[in-house]
Length: 135
Image (tube, rainbow, N blue to C red; front, side, top):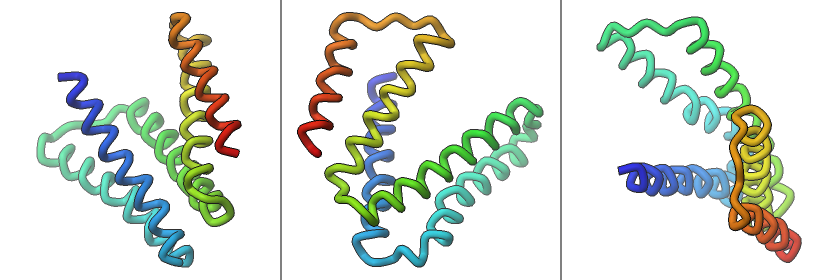
């Protein structure tokens, strides 16, 4: 079941990245504000509706984490759109994804004491080499 959920996540995340590139490729940079409002506003409405329907209350921690995630996600998306306006997606997306993998790995190692296998270290190194080759 976990693999199935990851595949769905992969497909939906890919769709989001495609729409990011399409926004720039179709010359809609002037619509970035509307795009960002829809991208983050729709989930807010869905979550608030779900909470209301099921009479769920959010704790302060839930709200704080949500605000941090939303602010980081919106800022990251905005910077990705700016980067896509200046460089091809074939370069921008791998660099962004590598940054995500490296940062997540470092945070996991430092804060959650996760351990990487030799194969995982090699995968990270190969990713760095691939990014260098793309540039």
